[in-house]
Image (cartoon, rainbow, N blue to C red):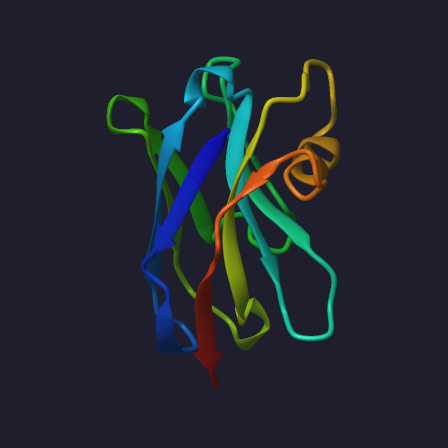
Length: 132
């Protein structure tokens, strides 16, 4: 079992920045990839960014590429998401996720999808609201 707790959400104006944090505890040694996904009201879950144990490679959804940066401090079991140049379309609940599924050879899209399937571990989420 893995427990994930997010923090750092809030309300900002378009063009602003936020940094989300996630602290992991439990069976983190089995983690293959950790990342973030979001869900806006009335919409499905959307994988945003992931970082994997294969050399710390990172993967991003096209909608956030160049604006969001995912980093990890494995010594502290911390995961971060730096979000810059935020847009109103980024408004959503953001969740930290941890997948133990093997992802070797998968595309970036498939890896991001691995974060949102029920077999992944999820936190409770932190709300991000971007006003125009």
